[in-house]
Image (cartoon, rainbow, N blue to C red; front, side, top):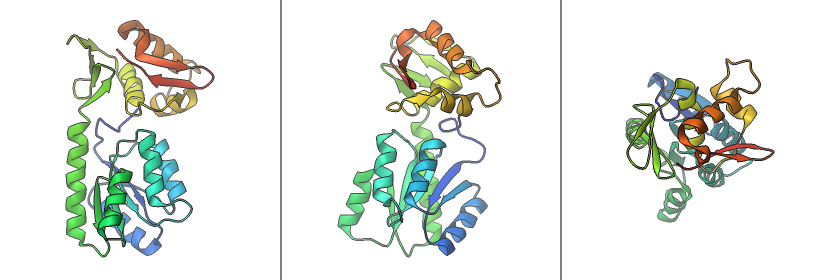
Amino acid sequence: MTTHASPPATPRLLLVEDDRELAAMLAGLFTDEGYQVDLAGDGQRGLHLGLSRSYQLMVVDRRLPVLDGLEMLRRLRRRAVTARVLMLTALGDRYERVRGLDAGADDYLVKPFDVDELLARLRALGRRFLDEAEQLPIGAGLLDIERRDVVLPDGQRIPLSPREFDLLQALALRPRSVQTRPHLRARVFADASAESIVDTYVYYLRRKLGRTVIRTVRGFGYQIGTL
């Protein structure tokens, strides 16, 4: 079941920081603030987690081993990852701040930083994430997160079953990505035993919303389409 746009009781945060002492301190701080924290020590691991799991927030160091923080962020944004990202860095001049924001960061905080300011910025980013995640576009239509239904271009509302909603949300959250059947099965139908469960619910959604709502990419998987 997806949780990226329909917020969980404990918001999920990805921390990407190679300084082990600082990372441990921040992870403890964020946990105490009520976040569920995943930690990555380099940019490649951060990229993997960012693409394979759903986060509301990310805190990313600018200079990372294996894969630079800016490049990691660019790749996440190219795959339509919508988490709000705060970049932490010792590189505080105007040029570096502009580079970070242009790469897809939502906020930028220079080391050394004030802990209270850091936490306040995260709270603000979390509110922005929830405000903007209430509806997800599906072409000219919308997936309404609060009401868990689909709004057609003419305003008509189509109710969805819980599993139909979860599958459509997983696809709509990453509109540029083609997602494999095994990935969708693990993400949405982890408790199901049938191998064909993803195909079955794609069929249900197309029957309700039209064949174009989900695109089939032959030999790979599915991608969100249009209404």
